[in-house]
Image 1 (cartoon, one colour):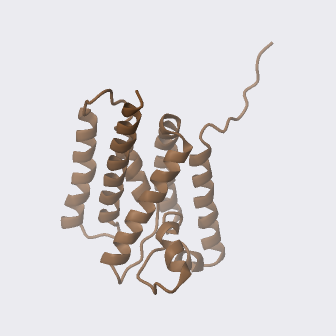
Image 2 (tube, rainbow, N blue to C red; image 1 turned 180 degrees about the horizontal axis):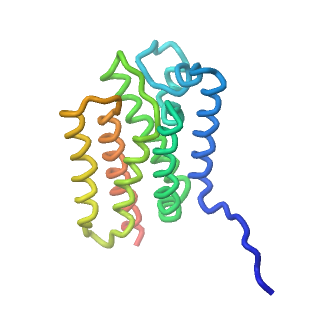
Length: 193
């Protein structure tokens, strides 16, 4: 007798994050842009406004268009489950929230006249974090160096020489956050043995 295939929730944290981002995207469509402006973008606003603190994290949920949403979420769905399997859902949530806070605070402090939204910082954190998956002992994998060189170096180049609506600083900070947390999680895991 053949077994039937069934759906499996292989990565609850990544799937949950994806569904929350999708819900934010739909809410923004229904509200004709109000949700992104008020909830899902970080920008300089009064520290007396409670939404200022929500937006420090909530900006990673908002996306400006379907292409923006798909570009970020596809990368998260490809890389995220492998990371969640390796590090666990709680650690992945910590990476997501830390990346949101670091990129949100930097944008709040450095770019008072613009708004930032999207999960690209999380994507870059995941890309750099994924380079730590195969580390053994005190080795530094060549793939980590190459990923850092190409992704972070590319973002520095684009930030200096290409004018577009992409926040290269968010990508750089996301990648650095993923690297620091990957190193810390790897070191913590090695200290247990």
